[in-house]
Image 1 (cartoon, one colour):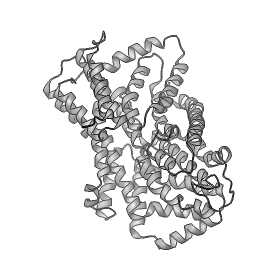
Image 2: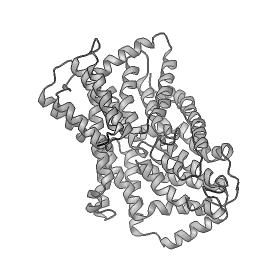
Image 3: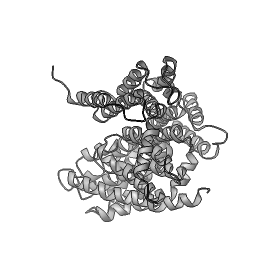
Length: 478
C-alpha cells in the first residue's frame, strides 16, 4: 500500500514536537497538547482526511489522554476532558454559522439570489464598468446572510457572470482580457471586501469572535463590527470596480448585450414568487434584529428564530436542513476547532508564548507593535490554504501576545486583526474558497493572479490600517 505523504507529515510534526523536552515554564501536558494541536493544524492545511474529521480526532485524542485541565496549572481529570471535548458544540457562534448556511440555502432554493444578481446586471450592465458595479452590488446584497463566500461568490455570482464574456467573444482561450478577466477579478476582490464588511459574511469571522471571547473576554456584536469597519470597507467597496478597471483594464468598454441577456434570463424566471418575498422579508427581519435588537436578543437566537420561520413558511423544509451535508460538516468542524483553540489557553500555552513574544518586542512603540502584528497576521496567509486553519492556529497566539504588551488597546486591535480574515482571501489562488473557482475558470493567468493578489492585498491592508486604525483609536473610550 502506497503511503500518503499528506498523512505522514502531520504525524511526523506532532511526534517530533512531542519528543522535544518540555520548555521551561510549561507543564508536560501543555507541551504535549501543543504537539497534538500542531499536528491537527498541519492536517487541516494538507487535508489527508476531511478537515472536520481531523478536528474530531484531535479533540478525541486530547480528551482520551487527559491533556486539558479545567484551568491552567491544574492537573487534568477525566471529567474535565469530557466537558472540554464537547464544549464547542454548546458555543452559540458555531450554531450561528450553521443557521447562516440555511439562509444561503434559502436564497438559492427560492431563486432570490439569482434574481437580485440578474436585476442588477439588467440595470447597470450597459458599460463594462457598470457591469463591474452590478457584480459588486449583487455580492453586497447577499453578503450579510451568506457566511460562506464560496457559496455566495462561487455558487451564486460566478455561475451567472460566466455566461457574459462569451457574448463578446471573450473566452479563456481567446480574448480573456476583453471582458472576462475584469469581471472575474472584480467578483473575487469584491467578495473579499464584503467578507470583511459584515460579521456574518464569512464563517471564520464568527469563529474569530468566539476565539476572541475565550482569549480576551471581549465581545463584539454585529452592529459594532460593521460600524467599526465601515469607513475602510465602504471606501474599498465603492472604489473597487473602478480600481480594477484602471489596474487590470478590460479591452471592451461597453457591454450592450449583457442587459439583454439578463432580461431574457429574468423572463425565464417569471414574476417574483411568494417564497422569494418571504425569504426577503425574513432576511430583513434578521438583519434588523442583528443591528437594533442586540440588547434584547442574542445574535444566535435571532438566527434560530429566522430559521424557525423559514421552516413554518416552507421556504425550506426540515428535510432540506437534515440533508445539508455542508452545514452539518461545518458545524462539527468549527465546534472541534473552537474547543482545540480554547485548549491552548486552558493548558497555559498561550500565556507562556505571549510572555516570550512580549519580551522580544520590548522597546518598540505600542502603535508600531500593533501594526506589525496585524501586517504579519495578514501576509503570513501566503502559507495557508484555509482561512479557518489560519484563524484557529494563529489568532489566539496573536491575541495573547498583544495582551501581554502594556498599553495595547485590545478592542481596536482585536477588531482590526479579525477584519483581515476576509481581505487576505485576495492574496493567492488558494487563499479562500472562491479563489480556486476564479483561478480555475482560465480568464486570469497564473502570473496575473499572483501579481494582482499582491497589489490588491497591499491596497486592502493599507486602507484597513490607514483608515480604520486611527478611526478606531479615536472612537474607543480611553
